[in-house]
Image (cartoon, rainbow, N blue to C red; front, side, top):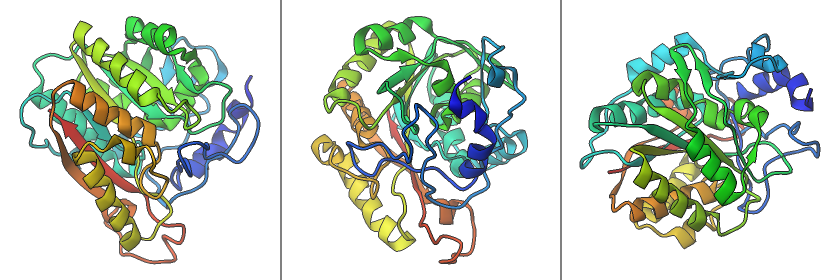
Length: 325
């Protein structure tokens, strides 16, 4: 049994306070040295991530399915009630939404928009940051996902492309345990019930050429499948709201102007995973799509809470939904 399986309840409590990203494009945001046992820094305060279901079969290695460990049906339904379809200039081809479940209505809105604008979706590919230390810088899994709405089947052909063409490691435990990809799976199954899924976790230690290599592979996948490609990304971390807004404005300008060089130099002040955001922008260009900012907020505004420096003493996390259609 791997170390982080033993600390699942502790990490669940920490996730209830938020999630952190990398402090720069080269260093992972971890505090330990064991394979995946490091605890991420806390970026903000929220209770919108469900406790780990430590009694689930997969948590003890008995299931062939991955579980959505942070799913909470009551909070899921609440986020559905707040979500909306974004205006797009045609079919949604790829997009960005948070993985922080405080902004679950933003995640729901992205997939609701996909369901409303796409005629067919064979596969949803989720590219997400890796929050825990690992000897591998790219991780994936061939396993399907167990959700309350049925099994989200794995697109094993796309998954194998991640392994054979990018050198991604097959790590079922990392894929399941990291909330960055699993937060999206219930929304995918709910809004796009017939779509298969394929997830890729990207470490901030990955080589600097990954945005180019990955965007080329994703464009290739879009040629052989009717794919929706989504990026699970949170933005400004650890800043007070006014300062976060300044960095969010800088991020918005870089994304809408497709300035990938600038994006790849960003730190946690702007985005948790610059490489993933740069990949989204590069892919949008390859697909001939137009990027729009559909939603924007932070843990202060999306939670509809009165602002208090004591409540947000560690700062807020910012969220965007970007669509490319």
